[in-house]
Amino acid sequence: MQGNSQNENVVSLFAAKNKAKDDESKVEVKAEDQESFSDVMERNMKNKERIEKERLNANKSVLRSYRIKH
Image 1 (spheres, rainbow, N blue to C red):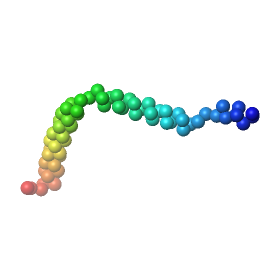
Image 2: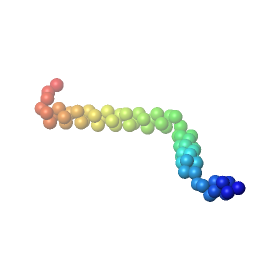
Image 3: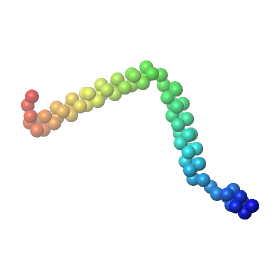
Image 4: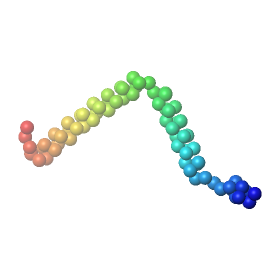
């Protein structure tokens, strides 16, 4: 009897962590469902174009700073 009453007062740290992870994963799934595939594709394309322009500008400035010619 004494062992059972002690186990009722024990708090499991792992159970709380697992529950928190489950809650986060549910939130992520809901956020993904709201965006359509075409919206994601469009956003990725814009990011790709922006990054390409930034890389071109950065590469030009490096060439100038080191005085390297093509």
